Amino acid sequence: MVGHMPLLLDIRECFRSLTVLTEQTFDIAEGKLHIVRVLATEGPCSQAKVVRATKLDPASVSRHIATLEAEGMATRSASDDHRGMRIVTLTKKGQSWFEWARRTRLKLERALLKGVDERDLAAFSRVLAHIDARATELAAKADALNEADQ
Image 1 (cartoon, rainbow, N blue to C red):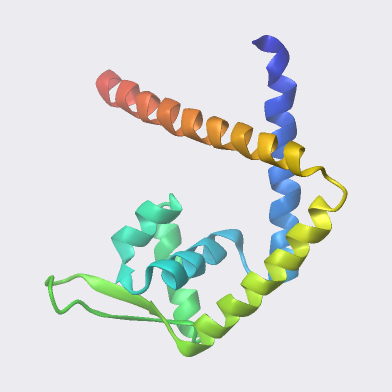
Image 2 (tube, rainbow, N blue to C red):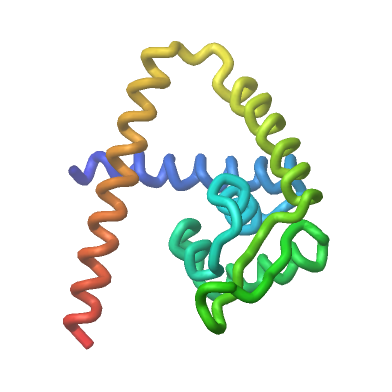
């Protein structure tokens, strides 16, 4: 398995390149983009749900949401059902921006994958899903081990 380490480093480097490309294309931080995507697809939700869905730390989510509010892309309001809970909602401006970003992302994806065979893409997608699932599983085990050590 030692021979696979360069592959993992290559994946990490590719992710960094894609992050830079995304941030330049959309003029938005990657974490903030994740939050907008969650709000656009899930609808209004609690800040805690945004944290779970994005896997970002709570402080980062709070900062990004504050920025989205200042930009007029999101609002926070008190929950009718749960005392003290804040519900985050995309504004019309945020929804419009998300739709533009979705269309732009599809164009960018087509440009990036131009010339790649459909079978190769399907295999690549399966490998990425496997790596993601294993990483999530191993991270949970690492968290449990770290908690046991404390």
